[in-house]
Image (cartoon, rainbow, N blue to C red; front, side):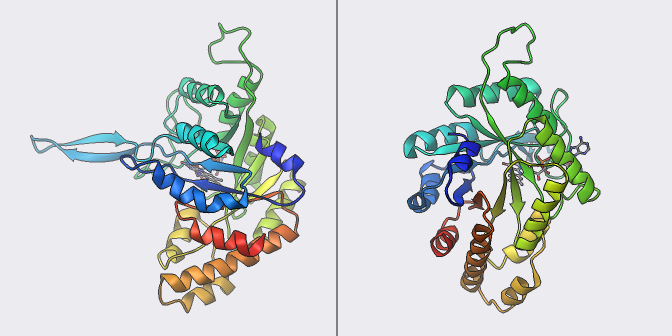
Length: 317
Ligand code: FAD
């Protein structure tokens, strides 16, 4: 079933979560071990992230270095199929613009279609590590809205190869990303919302937000989206803070604030166990308030660690 069908049929706030593909060389069982503790809560869908290549420098015998592209977490689409058929749950592969030509995008979408996956989260992707700005492939997409348009076109049976006249239409439910605290490259919230609307106008069916810790910012974002004419479902994304490292890592990586009240509690923490306890308590209160506000679904970022998410879902739903 599609994400928006789950939402349309729901009688209460749904639960979904996101996992990362296993590191190359590791068994898929690692991934299942992270999923299994959360299956008792009947997730409506599970997202699998996409990780583009990273560049490493290998020293050659002549002393020079060779720049080599490597994908450390491959397998997004096949993992989605494996989860879908092992657990009977819907999956949402992430698809990014970075590293893809339009032709390769089409092929990736066909892989999903052939595997019976009709959900996709369409994203631009971040700049390659070490590069200061996002550089699209020569025949690729520079932002998510044109990627959404390509998927919407395929849903109408239009392929890149214009010799295909009566192409089989795909049937993708298309999600896109939204940023309650603004995307880090956007000039301001107004332009960011303008481009978000562009993605919806291009054919996106729903929005999943960047993680946040302050519900007030999410509620304001939803209000601003509605004022801007964005009327699709908006799914809040939550990630529990669980380690001392997260206190600086999460704001730096995701360009989000830690609210003062949470920060004050975190300052008292002496070890990861203390942070985990504070993070779970905060997550439960955040989740309860979002459910009370009637959000369609809450999407949890597990990043391979399901214990804290399990405690939050148990405590809040
Ligand atoms: P876009 O919507 O293209 O926006 C990017 C920036 O460009 C914004 O500042 C926007 O305001 C601006 N912009 C948009 N359109 C235009 C235009 N026409 N002209 C000028 N400016 C424009 N990354 C991964 O690599 N893999 C993942 O699996 C992944 N999953 C994610 C899941 C979620 C829910 C979220 C919120 C993010 C995820 N990301 C992932 C990170 C994401 O790829 C980055 O945040 C990326 O920097 C932006 O992606 P986007 O799709 O929001 O881009």
